[in-house]
Amino acid sequence: MDLNRNQFFFIGLLLLMLGLQFRMVASYTLTSEATRFLAERVHGPTLVASADGAAALAGSSSFPQKTFHPPNWLGWCLMSIGGVVVLHSLAMRKPGG
Image (cartoon, rainbow, N blue to C red; front, side, top):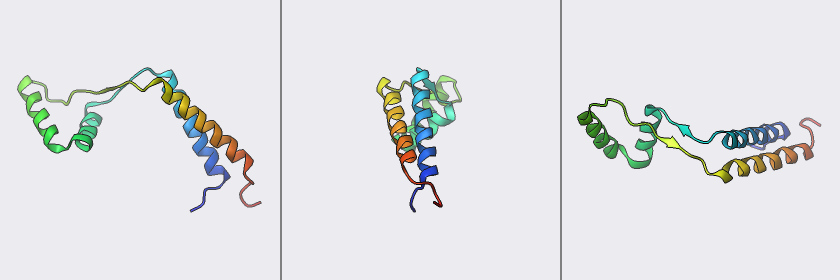
C-alpha cells in the first residue's frame, strides 16, 4: 500500500500536534486500568497478581496510578519529524493528478 500526499500530510500534522502536546504538558497520570494494562504487557500477569494481593492486604481495591514524565527532547523530536513530513507531503504531486 502506497501512501499518497493527503496521508503524509495527516501523519505529519498528527506528529506535529503530538509534539506540541508533549511540550505543553509536564506529566501524564494514567488511570488504574491503564496502569494495570501496561503492567500486564510489560511485566506479565504473575507480577500484577502479586501486586493485587499486596493492594488487597493494604485495603486498597484499585491498582496504583502511574505518572509518566516525558523527556524534554521528545516534544521537539516529534515536532521536527512532523514538520519534515508535512513539507515532504507538500512537495509530492497531488493524488489523481
